[in-house]
Image (cartoon, rainbow, N blue to C red):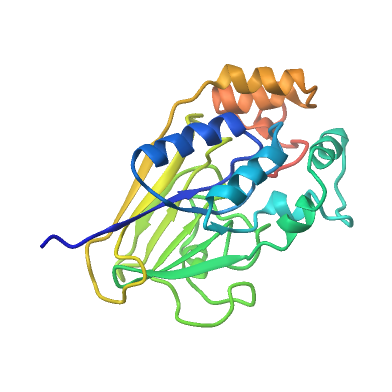
Length: 261
């Protein structure tokens, strides 16, 4: 008998883009995938953080903390502007507290591999590790830290944050991948998510795979909603979700207003 393989959809960095999220969720549903893990950044940049949180609370088995989820509702955050105040006011009562209390990491077994998921790095949701990282940065992602806690170190690490999907394996079979972004994908602005396939919860070796999926959606509908709601920084949002050009790179490569992907 063929061995049953479980499928897990990993989504990340929706950033208030409900139109993109619904398109991705429809694709996940059409594939018969019922287990969805979210790697964080539900809010900011896009107009419907409240609705994105509500939807992810409904459909995601695992929800993790992102840098925007930590920073936006933080009463002591140092950065503030009109857009941040608007995105925060868009949340409903209790959502800010829910975001800031989300777990940092999630570990599980899949086909004999120890998988660890977090938003940005093994040390903080605010520490970014890009695809062109150093060997030391690669190794740090697999290390136990005060943020991840103790326990067996992972063989597979998945994260989001940078909005740039990639996949990498070293000679010790350590596997690193970035999910990319559902709602704010850079370079290619088409939403992207990851499907992990294997035997969930099993310590026995079995087939294992990582698949990246691009899902087209109606960008203009999303932009129309943002305009109708009067969201600040609409031009920057348009540049990102229509053209894949990060707002920090639009006018001033040396001194962008802020770098929170």
